[in-house]
Length: 387
Image (tube, rainbow, N blue to C red; front, side, top):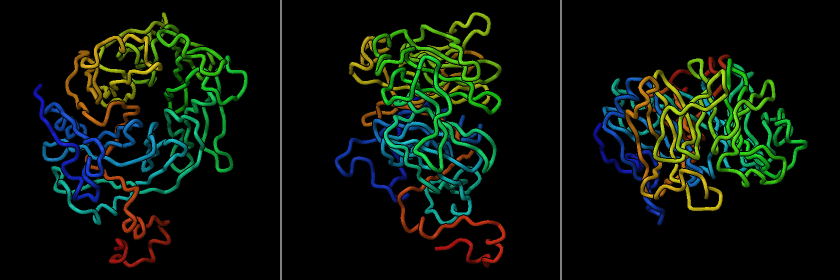
């Protein structure tokens, strides 16, 4: 497994972005194993990664054997959710919803052709922005199918699960039994949301307390994993757990405070470590036998002080996405971010080899439209891709 050094985004100028660091910002650089592009191409996917600390959505895309790390700016992006043609980004005080309009790919400037010779196979354009206020939004998920799907998200500030509402900033739908009222105090630091059979089923929290910021008193091993359906605590004694996921008939979770990837034993409720990685593990997605795990370097602050991973030297902690084979528990590939990117929150798999996301290019947004089929039928074919 060799390493190949890459610049932050070798195609930023041609995609209409300013090169990293051109405005006095720190450069956005990464190093990756040479097999990572091959893995993504074989799976036919790309990765969406959020880093609230650097204010970026990172798209990890492979084309012609090269990994392209493509950045888009958001205000503290955290939770990500993909379903069908919809992609949602949870930011500092709002949720952005994007729709994939493949026809717009023809209007993009060539950057890097994929193995089929096509430049892009997806283009996400903004459809709406929902204002939530500063609720410290964490993980999100689409619940349901098609246009009837609801967007659920973790409202960390109010210690509850919510749905997006057409009337309110958020609609609370569930809270742990030990939270007796909706209070903006970040009592337990509810953070992770996992689905099972398409429904919200698992959550993680850093403490079991109803006192404002009470989770900080025992963050080293006060973390819990809960069953939403029954309200029961399935596992206690975890070190800052995140990202519960049901996959291959197992309940997976990241024990972030120890840099762990593992699962919960169904009989005993104990956490079983599968792999220990060189960073604060947060953000988890699966494809085939592979787990894609986000790693953060973590800052030297009181929030992270006292947890096992923080006791390691800074040089021993890293930031990036690690690829672990679930059958062998071995790391098979990674991408490591340097300089400006130090913390990762979410990792999601996009079912496209080389997607684009547009959130700032006014001319392209002004001339691209999504219409009902009956309305589109009246538009001449030569005018369906407007300039």
